[in-house]
Amino acid sequence: MSKVGIFGGTFDPLHMGHINSMISAAGEYGLDIVRVVPAFQSPFRQPTAGPTPEQRYEMVERGLENYKDILKVDRQEVDRGGVSYTIGTIDHVRAEHKDDELYLIVGMDQFEGFDRWKSFEKILNRSHLIVTSRPGADLPESLQEFPLGLVDLVEDFDGKQALLNTGKSILFFQLEDVDLSATEIRKRFRDKESVHEMVPKAVADYVRENGLYQAVSAKIGDFEKFTEYCIQYLLSKKSIQVRAFDLRDMDFPSEFTIVTSGTSTKQTSAMAQNLIREIKTKYGTYPQHTEGLREGRWVVLDYGATIIHIFYDYVRMEYRLEELWTSGKTMDIRHLEPAAKT
Image 1 (tube, helix red, strand yellow):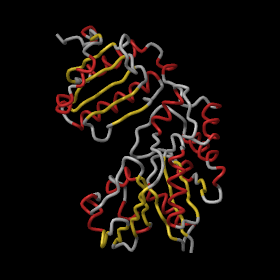
Image 2 (tube, helix red, strand yellow; image 1 turned 90 degrees about the vertical axis):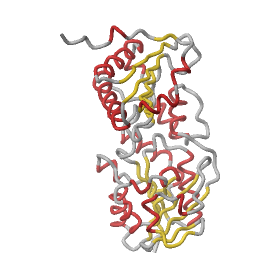
Image 3 (cartoon, rainbow, N blue to C red; image 1 turned 120 degrees about the vertical axis):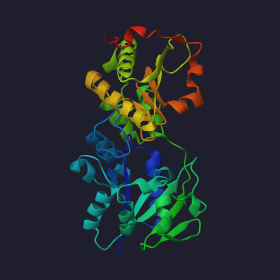
Image 4 (cartoon, rainbow, N blue to C red; image 1 turned 90 degrees about the horizontal axis):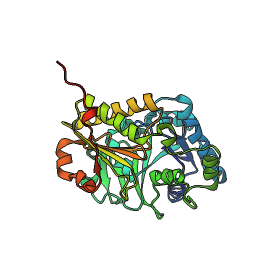
């Protein structure tokens, strides 16, 4: 009987943190192979400007060329298409490894919301769970730090291993590596900065050969007009207290910023998602990066030279973000307001 690891992700792009997690977990727990599964589309991630699923798969193939003895790239989710759910991936692997022990490898950030995963109880019936912690994320020291939905499944926990009533275990492993962010790596590619030792050379070469992670500016063009377009859309949807700032004379990473609010977290998330779709239709691009879409308290849409902040109104009052830009130029948006009905 073999021990088979499963490591999924968007790999946008594959970086050395991913590789260290897989290799370290395999060594620590004696895994014979790790199936590396690039997602077609993650259920937890809004699409952003960047490579196609096939290109992300190709980056993983090239980046893991030197690790083929232990890391096996699995294209099942790319071939299946649509939103990728882990339970389906595990069942697919189980069909090929009927008598083997399966070990799903996740990061501590994923474990914190594991009870929100589709069929998470079935996952823990069919696979052990290896939870790796990278710098900045502490492993749980007590059951009180577990996701609430997992607590009733635990029969015993000694700080390193939780024994489950499903017959499986949750294993906790502290990694030794530097903290790498895919967001920061994508930004470095866009800004033509060094990614040396952050990603395998084969990945960096593929990104540059195929012109991946280009700034969205080529599609947006005039960011002042783009900013006005976003403002006009938000006003038409009755967004609260829309304010915009021209930051071109200031030392900020963006040239324009928009701040607005919704009356609830649900409205805030919906407003952001609708704006993303509207911009994709008109300009043909997704944002370079998004934050907070699921929670809806403070959503950030990063389009490079224009950054949009959409708050739940209560959170906006708490952070008072506009004070950061008081020395910038407040944009006059009155001409963008919908005409009053008579």
